[in-house]
Image 1 (spheres, rainbow, N blue to C red):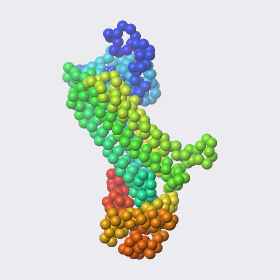
Image 2: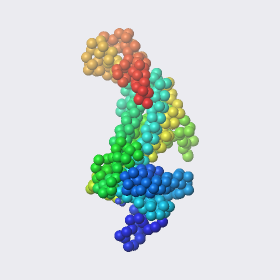
Image 3: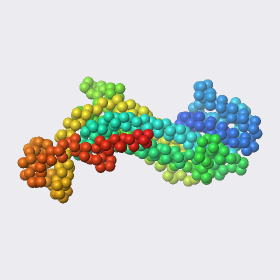
Image 4: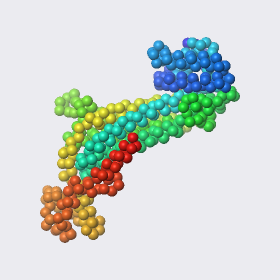
Length: 457
Ligand code: ARG
């Protein structure tokens, strides 16, 4: 390959280390398919508007198609010394077609080219990520459907609070992940405008048809301002934010799996395929995968901040700083995908222990609110009922008994409105089933929530 393409005004060759520092091929090489697609659309349009002859355009398009086929078959490998993927493709084309290859870059710049490639690449990646989140949502719904009657303690401050069901808990994550899908689809909608034809920053004097290339590449239309076209990286930030939030949801879920599979909780056991042992302690079965998902969230959150920080001081239009965008957003999308791809089967293969969860509900006065509510239904103001119940709890702690074990005489010591009905009120299963308020854990409510997630899917 010749000296670099922009070498016109330069007398000396680029220092090797400078070239290496400046080069982005290791990061942007993965966009080659989209770079070629963009060039095919550009050359096709140039042929249609007469900037190229029909014959020239056809030859360039055929040459580009060959390059893509060769990359896919492995006959052509990306030169790691190339400055970036755009230069590489153009250089190969020129190598193969001679002077005709040099016509491709008419009415175009690498600035609109890179903005285009990143959009095309991320548009496809977004679809993949959404599919992966959908897969997780399916698994959540499946487990929830068989767990509507699995009673477990719900926590606040990591202390046992009120009884819920495993299904109700899982549906909470289902809601989060369905919003994540919404965020990705929303970002995709906004990024679906073509920057191609913005050229370096100020458009071109050639009679190009930006609507045509936008159409050929499946965009809703061209972006409306050429400076914005080459400078906009909002879509990277939006996607990075969607990744960070989705990872944060995964991380919270992962943390619960770490807790649930601990001896202290004992609510679940990971499948051997998704857990690891210790090099010294033979008894260990660690939740490394869940912990790694939790840990990788740090990097993905960092990528969002990195992107915002790169952009915050940049004057319009293109600045080389923007080359840094890809490493961050690619890493976020890659990391999220790899986490989803392992988290979903890990969750699907996790064994839950309903008896252990129900057992845990017996200890910790999870029915105390229900005792207070029982008195409220007898006409006692809530604050008073709350106080009475607080005293009962203190009494139970002192006597080492549960609310179910108290005799009616003992109850009456605290308030003479108590009757036999209190046992029904503090029965843990009833505590769950009576929480029929919209979005609550009662069977019917949970089934409705599951149905709505299924409808969403
Ligand atoms: N590799 C560059 C990037 O990723 C392509 C655009 C280069 N443009 C320029 N004017 N140097 O941003």
